[in-house]
Image (cartoon, rainbow, N blue to C red; front, side, top):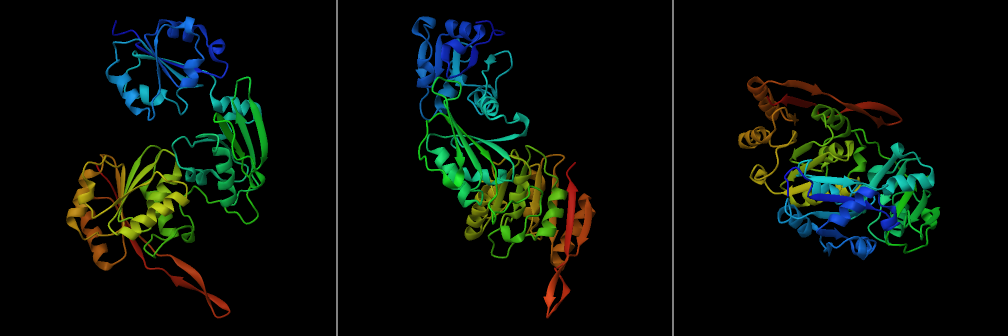
Length: 408
């Protein structure tokens, strides 16, 4: 096979099957040696249209994907069938991630997002998408705001009922739910109702759930900007307070796709707020105390970022083998020279390191490191109004000294 010729085709297919494929997809399938796809997809291809060996996806799919990328790469003309647009939460993403552009050809169909928005009259650009295929329901927390439109890609026929139950628990039981089953096929069906009253326990396995968010009278929406209320977190008191947290996140300057190390995570506030900024932000939280590590994970689940990774154990011993972070926050252990140097060495070039000090001794460490590494020092003094009898007075919090430095 010529190295410049595509050996892999990834063809989107809808519920209308063979009839809905364009000529390019049909020609690729007709010329294929190997035809991968779900059992349902393979059944949509007439036997007379392809003489390829048909291989249904195993469960899990990962070994088959790896086989395609190793044993068949460049040697076997392979076609993979996928639902709708293969690059929209589909198998096209892991298949093409490490291939060069001249090795593959993706032939998309209309995505579930486009079909659902067309049926509902929703603007695609204003609709959020959440996939619950092998992903936790708790990530929905991050998307619950009044009048927000959310499209959920379901795991199976039980998902709509579970989404409705989740919305009720989250204080959004008044939200309007629409379940779109078998989109684009002859058995397409649309069912609508209110989450709090949803009674249909099972839908077709092939469905998407559309949510128009309506908050209950006592429900709460938490902002995506840093500085969540302190009582949004379960804590034992070991946490960066709201005002300081907002400034700290501004200094850490999260960007989409970046990784934070939260060293000495405590309650997990910094890492959680970092990940809430954008769905592609990630964080590894290091916490040596078992109860606190478990608490960080619970907070992450409840605040919509279940993907936050918690490593339980002493730092820097737990740093081994991890990807270099784009930013590091050190909330404790500032006097530990080994810890600081391990953080500095792990930090990517151009990355930001932010450290907060409360005690005089830890502040002295920051002053000394600033003299060696540069960066900025600043002090925050925050006071909150507290009742004093029938009046109020300012109650100061402990001053915080903050060092911010960018690694050359």
